[in-house]
Length: 331
Image (tube, rainbow, N blue to C red; front, side, top):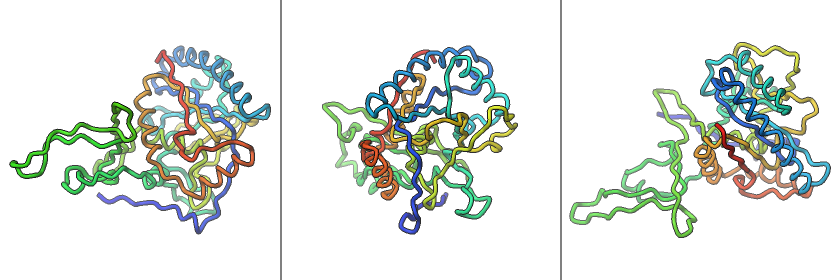
């Protein structure tokens, strides 16, 4: 099965800068069933988040000064759960946040981490930005020369699997007179012992590619960090969604990212913090593995670093070092 590859032609494009907050805080993540049928749980989690958000904002002010810019966001799952209509889900979600005294500045659709509408003036009308393909093309897997040479395991670009070390070897393709002993998996850069993670990025069914939750979550982090461009232009552009505007019946009728708070700090930020239920521990561990294998666009990385330097904000070269998590009990 052949799929298109993507290469950002930075040398032929002007890289557009993005406004940057100091910190982007993601507030929770709920299944659509929970929002619709267990709203009390959602409301309780949002109430718990209020003092935590305030504490992280104060911590950011201590680090960056009184003019610190912090925005909040929420990612709704319209990629894996498109059958639930936004008109039913989003009103309940935002009402629960308002009841808890929590402000959500930006609301994003997870399907935008797969593909997003092209911004006007860049490419043909009706096209879509291949966001997931862009990121997949920038993953650099550690070499597994022996496995590839023996045909034991295809490379990441074919298999859709990415790991943080050397996979186990059980048996050998060599002649029986020269058996190779079992070799356990081994983490790259390990301490005395290894923690080995093997992450599925996607799987292919017939002609369709289905991206994994952990891969789209990694793309979500890159969008929030302002690290993605398409022919030099931003991949997403938050659109103001007035509070009195009705929600549509179909997710595709919504912008990829909606600005709910007209006075919000920028959506993109030098650092991200995701406050999530503990059930997402494995997914977010996988996100870090994916980001650790990312080779960002050099021009975009240089631009973000220069923006940070101008504001006396240190921007780590490794994207994964800009990402933080707080995992909470309860769901």
